[in-house]
Image (cartoon, rainbow, N blue to C red; front, top):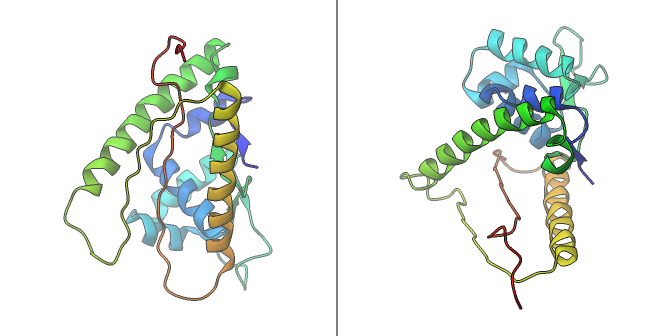
Length: 189
């Protein structure tokens, strides 16, 4: 199961920068990569990518991958959690540092989601899969927890598949899910 960032607000604040978020997503999709590969994937300069990778290392979200990379001239990286990152606001909201970190990531996440929605509706390569799912369900809190666990397991399985499969041309796909009560008040069944 993936790591929840509910213990260290500092790590969550690292994700307030859009390039760091992109780099982390690319690393989670690929398993390992160097700055050159990530610069090509994100369309950013290698020096900017290298700087933000070092920042992610400092925050404990990324680590060196010395066993990868052949001759050792290029620094390779991997995420510290190979199963992705999931944010649980419950524990973070109890401290001033946590609330500040949540506010920073809230702004960044809203901007990312808006950009992805806009990109979704732009003309695109017809071979690339683009699907949007929206569902409303009547669930108990326990059922919602089980649903979230099953969704996480499904996404983890496909993420691992993409990192392990060596065949075919692959591109990084982004899946964003959010499971939450539609209204704050409790529903009457």
